[in-house]
Image (cartoon, rainbow, N blue to C red; front, side, top):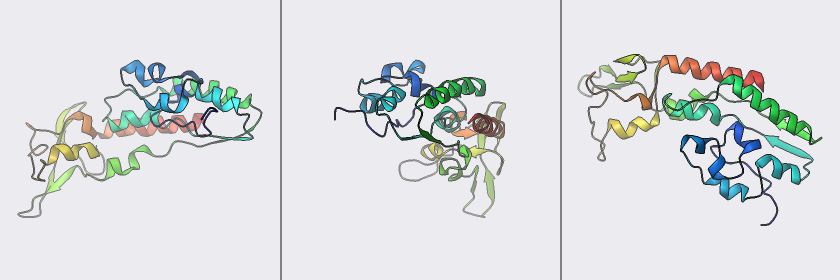
Length: 207
């Protein structure tokens, strides 16, 4: 298909990528050593997403970007950097000015609540003793050390499921004692939750 695609969305794209990325190797995440081959599949050497959108002279353009600037940070338990809100603001101004130059109708969308997705709500930070029904809080490695997690404050990610049970579904004992806590990468503790929510609010204020 010779012409640019009408849908130039790339799963995993950051705000930076819309104006600057032309291939997988120069994407935002590639700078951190994580290659996303979908850029090459969608952009196909025809320039950035913005350049290809502009070439089509659209009468209406939908631009929903920015979610991944915070999502990767959250889903990694806070171990992957987020886009600083000030940097996000500067990048969005560049993109907004570029979109305005197209002299067309543009629809944008804000960033939804990241921590409300099933990735964070499926596994509670506790389990139940099958013998007596007693609630047992998981232990987790947080930025401030190993401690018991708190229901309603700390979030356990879906990736923890591979650690909590073996291939046959039997408990591994991970998370049941301070000597065998859930690792930081599968926990978004209350302090990290606060950072995520504050960052999303700042992004949306910019948008």
